[in-house]
Length: 148
Length: 177
Image (cartoon, rainbow over all chains, first blue to last red; front, side):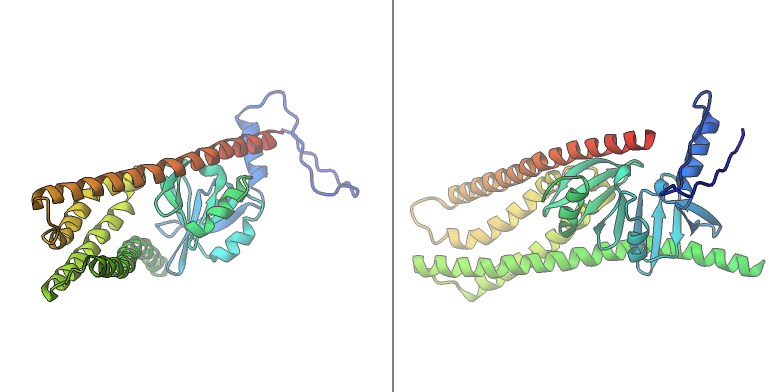
């Protein structure tokens, strides 16, 4: 694999172009690595090990007491950020606040179901259900491109 | 090394504590919600009963007031368990109407026990028939209300699911581009 870096002063933002004979695993890994650059934070696993958490892989963030946890399909990480920080960090990354304690990745939602008291239930990619509070239903609908 | 081990234990504890805290929040929420909802029902119920008694010129004995109070107390307990079941992982995968229908017989029993005190004051029909009539009215109103609210809301969420599918298709295409 050859790597070229060219400086161009007239570019509005950094562009990356991949030229390949065919799209194989190596190319996909490269795409994932580029996509996740600037898209990570440090999290702590259950055993205390520190590991990078790729925001795009997070299904949802949940605040429990003073801790915030990031849930991916296979792991749970404790992240040292507040939900408020995460809201800012995940702005324009398809995350939306759905209750006082949860921020969900819309891309991880598989299905929406009705729940009692005008709330919603979201089925996530990992088979888990989470609740959208009544006060956040409007924001959630807007994020899907629906009016109130 | 010992410092590292200490940190690991703290974090493991914190993960365990998280589960315990979630359970505590569930119980706390269920208690608060059940008491507040029944309190509203109680005050509205007392108001309607007073109007009903005033119009029908029916007097309520003190013992009946205690029975009404006990009835509403049981309602708090039933509501608490319904909310606990409704927030469990098992129930999250089921339509909310199912939980309400499962608890319906308990609500029916409480409603009939409360209604029995008033049934004896109505002339013309045997008490048993009146209770059956009340049970029928309760079942019809409860079921119809549940089905209407479920299917109305379901229609709305179907639209949301369409929007979600479009949203995900659109952004998948953006990523591929």
